[in-house]
Image (cartoon, rainbow, N blue to C red; front, side):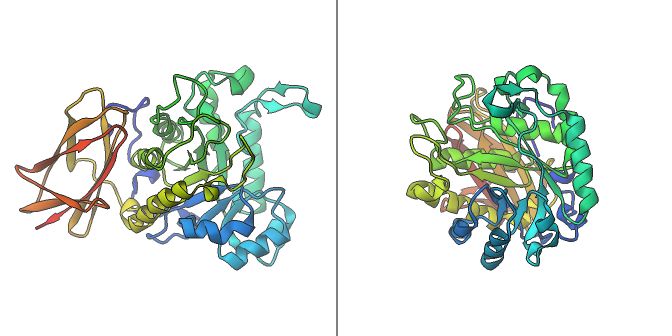
Length: 388
């Protein structure tokens, strides 16, 4: 994966999160499917009754079950064929339908200040040592499934007040990531209340980069994606912005996505995504394209094949390069909300080739070992380069 100058942290060497030729889920007998055509696209803390509707949107995994797992929840997910990562309890370990469970969920956002009993404010975050100890206990009870640890926005937001007394202490995170096999985080820049984050979609891949660094690319990294207004009554994401966040994440090495679909204001809607017709259409198309490209995304990266030169230095364009069959794939995204032209230089082409722009019904000629294209702010283009 190439990082064209927008990454806040240095990129780790190729590892699990760069498609190193080994499906990481094969490490667990009862974990997510290890087929090359599977890419995890999850939804956070939703009712199993909506599993079929989420499947129609392209969701293939539930993460979290409210006060579960219960027998009713597992039976409903089994009937819908929807795998789940959930908290580990005795029923989850023993229920006849527990084969639908493909991972265990650690406590959510332990790096945030924790609420004190009876609404008496907030105490410190949970200590990393406690998270690691709890992880070992979960694995001790069942080592056949991976453990997912989701961290808060402090992964990307250095001055996040929600970390309380550990605000700004980034040195905690290399210790936290010891507490999971799959490490994720959430930050929602479109609806964020801080002016210096609001609208800056690149905070999402910034966090992915940091998790990869803090895990030395030895653990699987996922991340969360906003797709509702959450609690911001003035702003909500557009499908265009969601697509940008998704592909920024993938290009920076995320191996799984978790959509946050709740709306809390002005009214509470648990499945807020499903109540938004335009977003349903947009997310469905995003997910369809990801699943179609899953074998490519799961293949080793080829970072030396392609170089990019943006015409506008204020807008880096980051890319991921893959090779499959007779084709080279270049996934590209403008990392700022400023338009730019981009020159792509492609090495080692076998002869005359064309760059098909996937999903856009257009192709670009390749001359002198390269091609050019225009990007709007935060625009995504996905190219398949193949012989003519």
